[in-house]
Length: 161
Image (cartoon, rainbow, N blue to C red; front, top):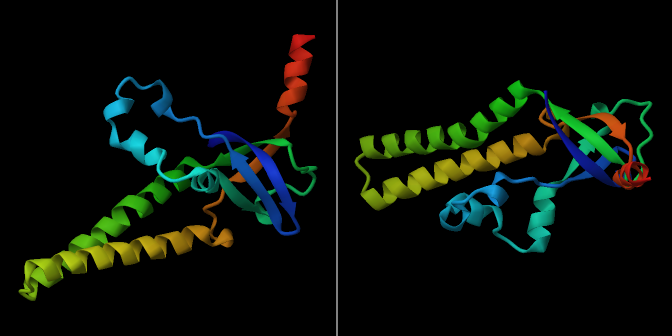
């Protein structure tokens, strides 16, 4: 089980919205100035960065006896198999569609720009399908709330005293 901590930002009747503080390995990497991944992780404005770190957890993935309040720190978990399968869907599925479309366009003896367009359209279609599949809250791709932890402020105050 892969675990991460988050903070509840909003409680809704059908679930909760959780903000996860992204702890990126990019911050401690010496090569971050010349790395494309570090640049892409910072791409977009503050609203885009917040949207990447906020997500919805359906009530089906929350134990009924947990008192969830805005501001509470929660421990989230997702199975390793689910995480590996999600990575395959995100990376391999669009590539498979793009290369298949490229092969079919090549067999049909289409011009190179048309082949490239077919590959881009097929890869983009696969991305849209994958995104739709991941956004379906009942699909089992969402993490579960494993436990409600002490608020970070209380932990700091207790340890200081």
